[in-house]
Image 1 (cartoon, rainbow, N blue to C red):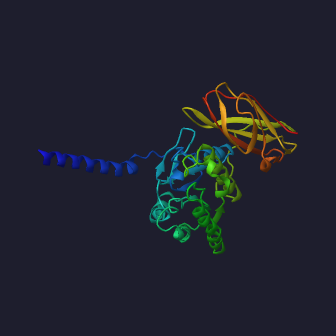
Image 2 (cartoon, rainbow, N blue to C red):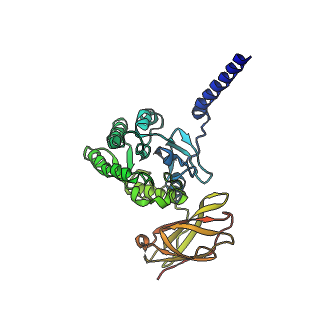
Image 3 (tube, one colour):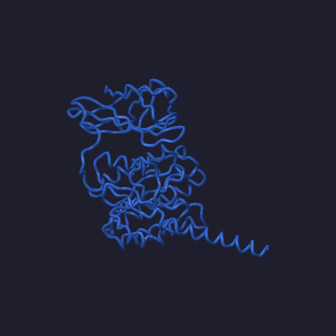
Length: 346
Protein backbone atom coordinates (compact mmCIF):
# COMPACT_ATOMS: atom_id res chain seq x y z
CA UNK A 1 0.00 0.00 0.00
CA UNK A 2 2.86 2.34 0.87
CA UNK A 3 4.45 1.64 -2.52
CA UNK A 4 1.19 2.50 -4.33
CA UNK A 5 0.92 5.75 -2.35
CA UNK A 6 4.49 6.65 -3.34
CA UNK A 7 3.72 5.91 -6.98
CA UNK A 8 0.63 8.14 -6.86
CA UNK A 9 2.61 10.97 -5.29
CA UNK A 10 5.25 10.61 -7.99
CA UNK A 11 2.60 10.68 -10.72
CA UNK A 12 0.98 13.83 -9.32
CA UNK A 13 4.39 15.51 -9.08
CA UNK A 14 5.22 14.57 -12.67
CA UNK A 15 1.87 15.89 -13.94
CA UNK A 16 2.40 19.16 -12.07
CA UNK A 17 5.82 19.51 -13.65
CA UNK A 18 4.38 18.94 -17.12
CA UNK A 19 1.67 21.51 -16.46
CA UNK A 20 4.26 24.04 -15.33
CA UNK A 21 6.09 23.60 -18.63
CA UNK A 22 2.95 23.73 -20.76
CA UNK A 23 1.31 26.78 -19.22
CA UNK A 24 3.95 29.33 -20.30
CA UNK A 25 3.95 27.90 -23.82
CA UNK A 26 0.24 27.67 -24.47
CA UNK A 27 -1.46 29.63 -21.71
CA UNK A 28 0.24 33.01 -22.01
CA UNK A 29 -2.27 35.61 -23.15
CA UNK A 30 -0.63 38.03 -25.53
CA UNK A 31 -2.13 41.41 -24.81
CA UNK A 32 -3.50 43.80 -27.38
CA UNK A 33 -1.23 46.26 -29.07
CA UNK A 34 -2.05 49.27 -31.19
CA UNK A 35 0.14 47.94 -33.98
CA UNK A 36 3.26 49.72 -35.06
CA UNK A 37 6.88 49.36 -33.98
CA UNK A 38 7.75 46.06 -32.27
CA UNK A 39 9.55 46.81 -29.01
CA UNK A 40 10.96 44.00 -26.83
CA UNK A 41 11.48 44.82 -23.13
CA UNK A 42 14.30 42.37 -22.34
CA UNK A 43 15.86 41.42 -19.01
CA UNK A 44 15.15 39.88 -15.62
CA UNK A 45 12.57 40.44 -12.86
CA UNK A 46 13.02 44.21 -13.07
CA UNK A 47 11.68 44.04 -16.63
CA UNK A 48 8.95 41.64 -15.52
CA UNK A 49 7.95 43.91 -12.63
CA UNK A 50 8.25 41.61 -9.63
CA UNK A 51 7.11 44.08 -6.95
CA UNK A 52 4.78 46.04 -9.27
CA UNK A 53 3.38 43.75 -12.01
CA UNK A 54 4.11 45.45 -15.31
CA UNK A 55 7.00 47.46 -13.84
CA UNK A 56 8.31 50.33 -15.95
CA UNK A 57 6.27 49.09 -18.90
CA UNK A 58 3.10 50.60 -17.39
CA UNK A 59 4.25 54.21 -17.52
CA UNK A 60 6.25 53.71 -20.71
CA UNK A 61 3.13 52.45 -22.49
CA UNK A 62 1.16 55.46 -21.22
CA UNK A 63 3.84 57.86 -22.41
CA UNK A 64 4.27 56.48 -25.93
CA UNK A 65 0.56 56.09 -26.61
CA UNK A 66 -0.36 59.47 -25.12
CA UNK A 67 2.21 61.05 -27.41
CA UNK A 68 0.62 59.40 -30.45
CA UNK A 69 3.14 56.62 -31.16
CA UNK A 70 2.03 53.16 -32.22
CA UNK A 71 4.03 50.49 -30.41
CA UNK A 72 3.69 46.72 -30.10
CA UNK A 73 5.42 45.28 -27.03
CA UNK A 74 6.60 41.76 -27.91
CA UNK A 75 7.92 38.72 -26.05
CA UNK A 76 6.96 35.30 -24.71
CA UNK A 77 5.91 36.63 -21.27
CA UNK A 78 2.80 38.63 -20.41
CA UNK A 79 1.68 40.41 -17.23
CA UNK A 80 0.53 43.76 -15.88
CA UNK A 81 -2.59 45.72 -14.92
CA UNK A 82 -5.42 46.90 -17.15
CA UNK A 83 -3.75 50.30 -17.52
CA UNK A 84 -0.97 48.55 -19.46
CA UNK A 85 -2.49 48.21 -22.91
CA UNK A 86 0.10 45.71 -24.16
CA UNK A 87 1.49 43.32 -21.56
CA UNK A 88 3.97 41.31 -23.65
CA UNK A 89 7.64 41.32 -22.66
CA UNK A 90 10.77 39.18 -22.32
CA UNK A 91 11.57 39.66 -18.64
CA UNK A 92 12.56 36.52 -16.71
CA UNK A 93 12.83 36.58 -12.92
CA UNK A 94 16.17 35.41 -11.59
CA UNK A 95 17.85 35.17 -14.99
CA UNK A 96 21.45 36.12 -15.66
CA UNK A 97 23.09 37.51 -18.79
CA UNK A 98 24.12 34.00 -19.85
CA UNK A 99 20.55 32.71 -19.61
CA UNK A 100 19.26 35.55 -21.77
CA UNK A 101 22.10 34.88 -24.23
CA UNK A 102 21.18 31.19 -24.43
CA UNK A 103 17.62 32.02 -25.52
CA UNK A 104 17.88 35.26 -27.47
CA UNK A 105 18.28 33.67 -30.92
CA UNK A 106 14.88 32.00 -30.72
CA UNK A 107 13.16 35.12 -29.43
CA UNK A 108 14.64 37.22 -32.23
CA UNK A 109 13.38 34.74 -34.83
CA UNK A 110 9.91 34.55 -33.29
CA UNK A 111 9.21 38.21 -32.54
CA UNK A 112 11.57 40.13 -34.90
CA UNK A 113 11.77 43.20 -32.65
CA UNK A 114 12.61 46.51 -34.27
CA UNK A 115 13.74 47.90 -30.90
CA UNK A 116 15.10 46.19 -27.77
CA UNK A 117 15.20 47.67 -24.26
CA UNK A 118 17.94 45.70 -22.45
CA UNK A 119 18.37 45.94 -18.68
CA UNK A 120 20.32 42.87 -17.54
CA UNK A 121 23.08 41.95 -15.11
CA UNK A 122 21.51 42.40 -11.68
CA UNK A 123 21.51 38.67 -10.92
CA UNK A 124 25.14 38.45 -12.08
CA UNK A 125 26.13 40.90 -9.36
CA UNK A 126 25.69 38.34 -6.58
CA UNK A 127 26.61 35.29 -8.64
CA UNK A 128 29.91 33.43 -8.71
CA UNK A 129 31.63 35.66 -11.28
CA UNK A 130 30.42 39.27 -11.28
CA UNK A 131 33.76 40.40 -12.73
CA UNK A 132 32.94 38.50 -15.93
CA UNK A 133 29.57 40.21 -16.40
CA UNK A 134 30.85 42.92 -18.79
CA UNK A 135 32.29 40.36 -21.19
CA UNK A 136 29.07 38.35 -21.05
CA UNK A 137 27.07 41.49 -21.80
CA UNK A 138 29.33 42.29 -24.73
CA UNK A 139 28.84 38.77 -26.13
CA UNK A 140 25.05 39.09 -25.77
CA UNK A 141 25.01 42.39 -27.65
CA UNK A 142 27.16 40.84 -30.39
CA UNK A 143 24.73 37.95 -30.73
CA UNK A 144 21.76 40.31 -31.02
CA UNK A 145 23.38 42.64 -33.56
CA UNK A 146 24.73 39.77 -35.67
CA UNK A 147 21.34 38.11 -35.98
CA UNK A 148 19.28 41.29 -36.12
CA UNK A 149 21.54 44.06 -37.47
CA UNK A 150 18.73 46.54 -38.14
CA UNK A 151 17.32 46.38 -34.60
CA UNK A 152 17.89 49.41 -32.39
CA UNK A 153 19.40 48.02 -29.17
CA UNK A 154 19.17 50.26 -26.09
CA UNK A 155 21.60 48.99 -23.44
CA UNK A 156 21.07 50.46 -20.00
CA UNK A 157 23.25 50.55 -16.94
CA UNK A 158 21.52 48.61 -14.18
CA UNK A 159 19.78 50.28 -11.25
CA UNK A 160 21.33 50.39 -7.74
CA UNK A 161 21.38 47.42 -5.37
CA UNK A 162 21.12 48.28 -1.70
CA UNK A 163 23.46 45.46 -0.58
CA UNK A 164 25.98 45.24 -3.44
CA UNK A 165 26.12 48.67 -5.00
CA UNK A 166 29.90 48.84 -5.30
CA UNK A 167 29.76 45.78 -7.56
CA UNK A 168 26.99 47.41 -9.57
CA UNK A 169 29.04 50.56 -10.08
CA UNK A 170 32.03 48.53 -11.27
CA UNK A 171 29.85 46.70 -13.79
CA UNK A 172 28.13 49.88 -14.95
CA UNK A 173 31.47 51.62 -15.45
CA UNK A 174 32.34 49.07 -18.16
CA UNK A 175 29.11 49.47 -20.13
CA UNK A 176 29.82 52.81 -21.89
CA UNK A 177 33.03 51.39 -23.37
CA UNK A 178 31.23 48.25 -24.50
CA UNK A 179 28.50 50.27 -26.20
CA UNK A 180 30.99 52.62 -27.83
CA UNK A 181 32.90 49.68 -29.27
CA UNK A 182 29.70 48.43 -30.93
CA UNK A 183 28.84 51.90 -32.23
CA UNK A 184 32.34 52.23 -33.68
CA UNK A 185 31.76 48.92 -35.47
CA UNK A 186 28.63 50.35 -37.08
CA UNK A 187 26.11 48.62 -34.83
CA UNK A 188 22.77 50.19 -33.86
CA UNK A 189 23.50 50.21 -30.13
CA UNK A 190 22.65 53.02 -27.72
CA UNK A 191 23.71 53.67 -24.13
CA UNK A 192 21.01 54.46 -21.55
CA UNK A 193 22.05 55.77 -18.12
CA UNK A 194 19.48 54.17 -15.84
CA UNK A 195 21.62 53.97 -12.70
CA UNK A 196 21.73 57.71 -12.03
CA UNK A 197 17.93 58.06 -12.32
CA UNK A 198 17.21 55.97 -9.21
CA UNK A 199 18.53 55.71 -5.67
CA UNK A 200 18.12 52.94 -3.12
CA UNK A 201 15.15 54.93 -1.75
CA UNK A 202 13.33 54.00 -4.99
CA UNK A 203 13.64 50.27 -4.23
CA UNK A 204 10.82 48.27 -2.66
CA UNK A 205 13.01 45.44 -1.37
CA UNK A 206 16.59 46.51 -1.97
CA UNK A 207 16.57 45.07 -5.51
CA UNK A 208 13.33 45.88 -7.34
CA UNK A 209 11.89 49.39 -7.77
CA UNK A 210 8.74 50.58 -6.09
CA UNK A 211 6.07 52.26 -8.21
CA UNK A 212 7.88 55.60 -8.16
CA UNK A 213 11.15 53.96 -9.15
CA UNK A 214 9.53 52.17 -12.08
CA UNK A 215 8.01 55.47 -13.19
CA UNK A 216 11.48 57.02 -13.22
CA UNK A 217 12.73 54.10 -15.33
CA UNK A 218 9.89 54.65 -17.79
CA UNK A 219 10.88 58.31 -18.19
CA UNK A 220 14.50 57.38 -18.90
CA UNK A 221 13.49 54.75 -21.47
CA UNK A 222 11.03 57.15 -23.12
CA UNK A 223 13.57 59.95 -23.42
CA UNK A 224 16.12 57.52 -24.86
CA UNK A 225 13.64 56.25 -27.43
CA UNK A 226 12.66 59.78 -28.42
CA UNK A 227 16.35 60.59 -29.01
CA UNK A 228 16.70 57.93 -31.72
CA UNK A 229 14.43 58.67 -34.70
CA UNK A 230 12.33 55.69 -35.77
CA UNK A 231 12.98 53.60 -32.66
CA UNK A 232 9.30 53.87 -31.73
CA UNK A 233 8.10 54.88 -35.17
CA UNK A 234 6.53 58.21 -35.98
CA UNK A 235 3.63 59.96 -34.33
CA UNK A 236 0.54 58.72 -36.18
CA UNK A 237 -2.26 59.91 -33.88
CA UNK A 238 -2.66 63.27 -32.18
CA UNK A 239 -1.70 63.52 -28.50
CA UNK A 240 -4.52 62.78 -26.11
CA UNK A 241 -4.16 65.95 -24.03
CA UNK A 242 -5.99 69.06 -25.28
CA UNK A 243 -3.96 71.94 -26.67
CA UNK A 244 -3.19 74.66 -24.13
CA UNK A 245 -4.48 78.20 -24.39
CA UNK A 246 -1.97 80.69 -25.86
CA UNK A 247 0.33 82.14 -23.22
CA UNK A 248 -1.07 79.86 -20.52
CA UNK A 249 0.03 76.90 -18.50
CA UNK A 250 -2.23 73.88 -18.01
CA UNK A 251 -2.05 70.85 -15.73
CA UNK A 252 -3.66 67.50 -16.52
CA UNK A 253 -4.00 64.76 -13.90
CA UNK A 254 -4.27 61.02 -14.50
CA UNK A 255 -3.93 57.79 -12.53
CA UNK A 256 -1.35 55.46 -14.11
CA UNK A 257 -1.51 52.62 -11.58
CA UNK A 258 -3.56 51.72 -8.51
CA UNK A 259 -3.83 49.01 -5.89
CA UNK A 260 -5.98 48.34 -2.85
CA UNK A 261 -4.47 50.97 -0.57
CA UNK A 262 -2.93 53.48 -2.92
CA UNK A 263 -2.26 54.86 -6.36
CA UNK A 264 0.38 56.30 -8.64
CA UNK A 265 -0.55 59.51 -10.42
CA UNK A 266 1.05 61.67 -13.09
CA UNK A 267 0.45 65.35 -13.79
CA UNK A 268 1.36 66.82 -17.17
CA UNK A 269 2.32 70.50 -17.21
CA UNK A 270 2.00 72.09 -20.66
CA UNK A 271 3.14 75.56 -21.70
CA UNK A 272 0.95 77.76 -23.83
CA UNK A 273 1.40 77.79 -27.58
CA UNK A 274 2.83 81.31 -27.66
CA UNK A 275 5.07 81.49 -24.58
CA UNK A 276 7.64 79.27 -22.90
CA UNK A 277 7.74 78.66 -19.15
CA UNK A 278 10.66 79.48 -16.90
CA UNK A 279 9.25 77.86 -13.79
CA UNK A 280 5.77 76.63 -12.91
CA UNK A 281 3.56 75.73 -9.96
CA UNK A 282 0.67 73.27 -9.88
CA UNK A 283 -1.98 73.61 -7.17
CA UNK A 284 -4.59 71.00 -6.36
CA UNK A 285 -6.77 69.78 -3.52
CA UNK A 286 -6.38 66.09 -2.72
CA UNK A 287 -9.52 64.11 -1.85
CA UNK A 288 -10.17 63.33 1.80
CA UNK A 289 -8.15 60.31 2.89
CA UNK A 290 -5.41 60.72 0.27
CA UNK A 291 -1.85 61.63 1.25
CA UNK A 292 1.31 61.84 -0.86
CA UNK A 293 4.06 59.46 0.20
CA UNK A 294 6.71 60.24 -2.44
CA UNK A 295 6.89 62.68 -5.36
CA UNK A 296 9.39 63.05 -8.20
CA UNK A 297 10.20 65.66 -10.86
CA UNK A 298 8.86 68.40 -8.60
CA UNK A 299 8.99 69.90 -5.11
CA UNK A 300 5.77 69.71 -3.11
CA UNK A 301 4.48 71.81 -0.26
CA UNK A 302 1.99 69.77 1.75
CA UNK A 303 1.01 66.13 1.43
CA UNK A 304 -2.75 66.27 2.17
CA UNK A 305 -5.58 68.66 1.39
CA UNK A 306 -4.34 71.74 -0.49
CA UNK A 307 -1.01 70.86 -2.11
CA UNK A 308 1.29 72.85 -4.37
CA UNK A 309 4.06 71.41 -6.53
CA UNK A 310 6.82 73.58 -7.97
CA UNK A 311 9.14 72.54 -10.77
CA UNK A 312 12.42 70.80 -10.04
CA UNK A 313 15.63 72.41 -11.29
CA UNK A 314 15.83 70.19 -14.37
CA UNK A 315 12.28 70.79 -15.68
CA UNK A 316 11.71 74.49 -14.94
CA UNK A 317 12.16 75.48 -18.59
CA UNK A 318 9.33 74.27 -20.83
CA UNK A 319 9.20 75.45 -24.43
CA UNK A 320 6.11 76.99 -25.96
CA UNK A 321 3.59 74.21 -26.58
CA UNK A 322 5.85 71.65 -24.92
CA UNK A 323 5.23 69.72 -21.71
CA UNK A 324 6.85 68.08 -18.72
CA UNK A 325 5.51 65.77 -16.02
CA UNK A 326 5.76 65.05 -12.35
CA UNK A 327 4.43 62.01 -10.54
CA UNK A 328 3.65 60.82 -7.08
CA UNK A 329 2.55 57.84 -5.04
CA UNK A 330 -0.30 58.42 -2.59
CA UNK A 331 -2.21 56.44 -0.01
CA UNK A 332 -5.96 56.26 -0.43
CA UNK A 333 -8.55 55.42 -3.06
CA UNK A 334 -7.78 56.01 -6.74
CA UNK A 335 -11.43 56.57 -7.63
CA UNK A 336 -11.49 60.02 -6.03
CA UNK A 337 -9.55 62.64 -8.00
CA UNK A 338 -8.01 65.97 -6.91
CA UNK A 339 -10.09 69.11 -7.23
CA UNK A 340 -9.08 72.49 -8.59
CA UNK A 341 -6.01 71.25 -10.47
CA UNK A 342 -4.41 74.39 -11.93
CA UNK A 343 -1.08 75.62 -13.21
CA UNK A 344 0.57 79.03 -12.98
CA UNK A 345 3.91 80.48 -14.04
CA UNK A 346 5.98 83.23 -12.40
